[in-house]
Figure 1: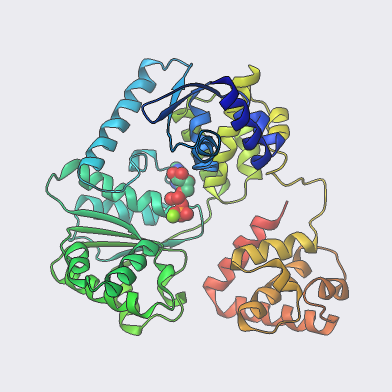
Figure 2: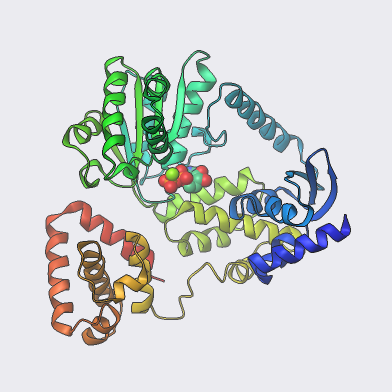
Length: 441
Ligand code: ADP
Ligand code: MG
């Protein structure tokens, strides 16, 4: 066992790097391999969560390389749970079992009780609660949109979990739009469209996640349009999430877009400081992590908007603290999270802005810097020039050099364009505002 694990650890260390290896994988032990299962001893549950979230499949892949066998991973915790945590864990397990027995792929943790409501999400969450209380009767469809990691999947899943808890015979389906697309393609290719229809049209509740994925996909849009029609006419509830509002989803047919617009559209904004602090408190309470007010505020200020990232930070802190036995304070927080949290002693650079903007628009940094003139790149480039002008003291010509070798007149022109568009287009204005907020150290 020891030799296997040593080999595996070496491979893991090569793949994840020494820093992560020391923090997360060194404390793990392989205790047995039996009946197709490998049992790993871990110090506490943060390890399981973090390792599974950050490196899904890594351990089983590596064990397969070493042993030649496909093994399922089991975890064994040395930490004992207190009664309250055990109760919560049991509730979770029960819901997990219920979901599994009905074949519904919902995360059992995504429930309203765990969702912190603040200014930024109160409209969307109230709408979701109304729909959960009265599916098919309140708002149909409910369309929730907002940026990455702001709780869309959590909210729409919460609707599903309420319904599954309350209604035994309700047919519920959660599906990502990517999976929906794959199923459409597969069905068309293999002449199985009847099965597809049977699956997606005989439902009481359809939860369709990340619908922006269907941009440009004609066959999928066609199928989705008819699916939504059938459900809508049967007064079956439809809930859709997207990273942008219907009007900004490109290359989608008008009739499908008008379906999206027929019910209620609710957005989730980036959380304000208070909401972020409340979320950190909630997560810390759920995971029984002791945090001082100073640490809570520090984290809320430093982690810009993405709540998923906030959770990642908390888990890392908790693991570090349980390993070293020292309490979490601001010093430790800075230290443990130094590769995640921006250092505000250094001024913001054009480089960082270009990177952040490229990430936001889902394009490559390298493309921002070329002279390419395609539309997909022109706008991000203008945004980057504008934000560099607003957020740094770098000269116009130096900004231009960093963004596709433009001269200073081009930078001025970009700034003017962006200013005008901000004044004319509310969504654009909001997008720039939150992007700027995210970039500021
Ligand atoms: P999205 O689908 O918008 O990208 P998710 O729903 O996956 O985001 O949320 C990312 C993580 O943040 C999830 O673990 C979720 O539980 C958590 N989260 C987001 N918003 C909240 C909130 N208001 N309260 C508690 N947790 C939240
Ligand atoms: Mg999501």
